[in-house]
Image 1 (tube, rainbow, N blue to C red):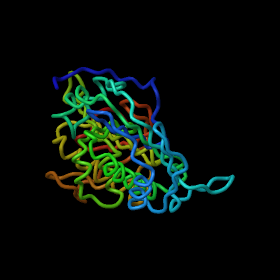
Image 2 (image 1 turned 120 degrees about the horizontal axis):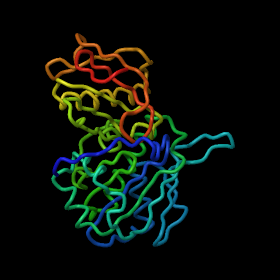
Image 3 (image 1 turned 180 degrees about the horizontal axis):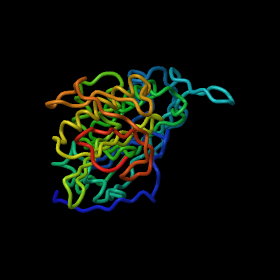
Image 4 (image 1 turned 90 degrees about the vertical axis):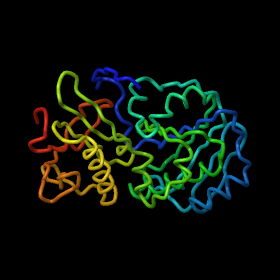
Length: 291
């Protein structure tokens, strides 16, 4: 994809903090709704005790009884909704969004052109779970979807704008909450026009009520920063965000995280849309912009 110019736009929709984990399964041909018994069997293998409370061509609703959400009015099981197959015409897949589909950059245009059908799936009531529990449950749900729909060509994760080939989802060897970082968090990269400055940020952490990350910098290999962002996001999720405003984290030296380099952290408003609070990482001599 050729280089494109985009404008900062923080006046649109804000990130959906704690919102549903939304997945679009993309297909070349229409996909039938799996039968009720198969859905229950597959879901129970991945997510535990499952009740199917509705099932027809348009919608399947499943309750995960091993994952209880607590509210003021009582306790209910987390639910999953799987919608029936509908036409897909690339709605919402604009140039800005597609420019950040790094894991699928060789196939992203082909997928949008060749896939004419979609199945939309989402969790419901899961925002009441602890972040690690929800991250694991959503990843388990994704594994179940990959098994239920073997003809799926690609998965698109609406919360973070990440597009992945279905084969990459089916064959992953990741364990625990790092699965959510892999599929539910996108690390984006931008160059600032007419300067040497770059911005790397994450999107998707707010689904778990955790902060996204932001780096505004120059003079350092951006691939090192991408790796740092993934590692730090994983740490924040695993430890329920222990980082306070003004604290430091290990920086990067010769491509590796090192205690010899300390980068200061501050909570700020994001520089790049969508509007949201981020944990800004001040990279010392490589930092750009004013804090």
